[in-house]
Length: 112
Length: 313
Image 1 (spheres, chains in turn green, purple):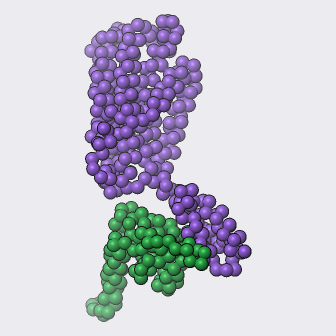
Image 2: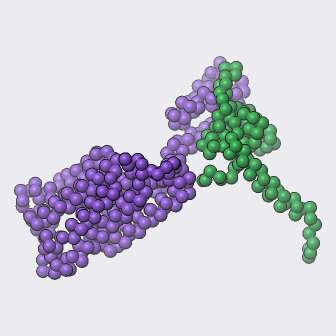
Image 3: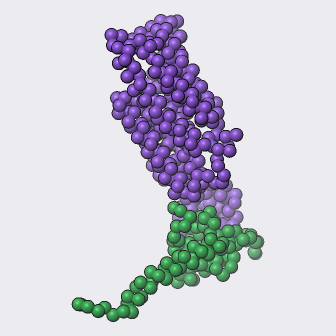
């Protein structure tokens, strides 16, 4: 898999969550679930596996670690590369959706 | 209280991850798991458990998988080890009868017919010296010098009909020479191909002297334990079969390349005819080279910065 490979849905929503600024693991999970209307419900192990991969691809980086109420939270930040990948994927899906919606908006002409 | 119990249970589950991963991530992941679990949970959820098991397995596989820049390096490493194994193999092949002959107090060794005598021993001595020189240069990472040694070794091997005489004795020297050239093609061409690739890509590092234990073991087994010889071949074959799926799963090409070169070549040259084995071995080495080059191009390239030949210095 090359560095420019397309994003799978969980990665897409993880990166999308980080558009709002650096975020810690649990906040990313909640954000992704909300933004995807409950479809992307990340398990913690899956989240960190994805974050490891995204960090390896240079799409996210660790912003800082903080201890809040006795819990260590690691904040991740979207990198420029991650932002580009996210925008590219969003454009691709927008185009894909457009193919369907434009077709639906135009009545079929010709033999039924 | 429940948080402590749950934390302990999750920590145990995190044992499936490699230790480096745990050292870097355990606290953060545990705290996230507890936060996601809520206050009333005593046991890890099935969903989180499954995700951790899968994640741990993936992290372990990822540790085996070289990153894109490393991949080409591993492939060259594999070729280098394969070349060393091949050279040591041919060293052992000549050294076995020679040592055996010396050990028997200059008597004929029945295993070799026609009789193994002074000329045969002289011929094998040259072979042993040249193979040893090539092997040592390869172990030191001096590929170009090894290439020269290999060329001298291959040319010297062509003197066989004049040193030992025609084989069979009633045959002609010209006939024997043709046979010798074919033999040289079998053992020397694949090695030449591998060394040429290594010399071309550069950056081969030196290896442990412990590799020299291998021909020593083979020579000992030749004389005293023929079973070891057979078992070595079987292990190479089984290893080859096991290494290919492993290479596909982990992306780790080195064991597959090494075993393919060593196992296949030694097996082919003992089992099949000269023509078939030389063709197959040459084809396989070419295919390996092509595969490696293809994979290297797919990744971000073989060099992670600057020409790698600097490592030679």
